[in-house]
Length: 304
Image (cartoon, rainbow, N blue to C red; front, side, top):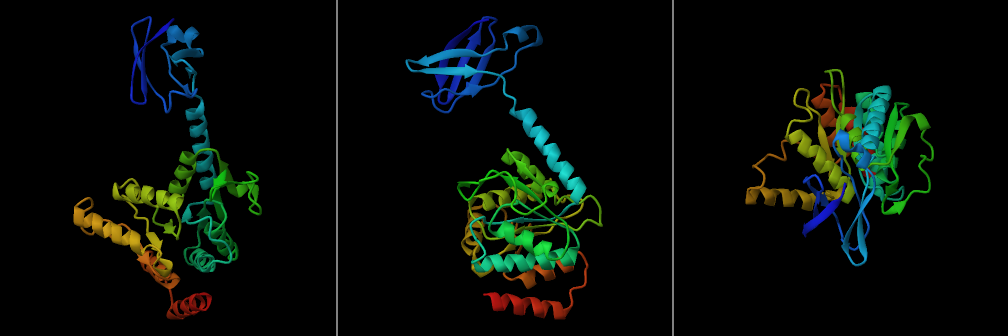
């Protein structure tokens, strides 16, 4: 079987084989070698081998079968298995750059400890450094279950190992694929019964945190999450960290790109740990005594 180059359009290369099939493949730069996968009909499997197409004097396109879809599906299954073993609970999204010396670290540690006690559930994070680490340590102080979906790169630096420095290996999964990791972080908060007490807690963070926040927010908006059993989504606005983001969303309302009150109805903005705990207690109908509120406020004030 032969392929003939018919032409290019933008980042696409169109080719036709000897059986008059038109195929379209996407590239990113024609000056580099890249791999694109395609499947042939069963009777042509013998030809499903590497082929090379000349695109210019110094460039070739390599075609070979991609295996990553199967690997992604397998990794997603491993995420689901881990959640099944440890149980759903509260997922914390937050910066990997805010370490123990940052005031938001100590606030997060306290918040995770108090929420774990209040909801008596598993604590889930991206199993990375920074505020994720604070949430893990806070939950561990209660003796409750902790799980995580680790990734090989955090805060722009490659981690030295695929292993977490102190979590037991059976409580976390090191993901190769961001898509699998996101599936895990989403599934960990899906409520399957009224007894499930879960939540999403968005802590201060950067690009990765915002990516995860808005993906989950969109899923809630489209009723892919919480259509039958709502899931509370809390944004921790420590020191007005998200003030400008909230202003931007108000501007979106002004421009008509989101409906008035649409976003504010999907999440709860909390400025303090006490606000977040009181909201969760009310959401799930749990007692949160005034003494607990006062103690939480006092601890937060001392750490500011």
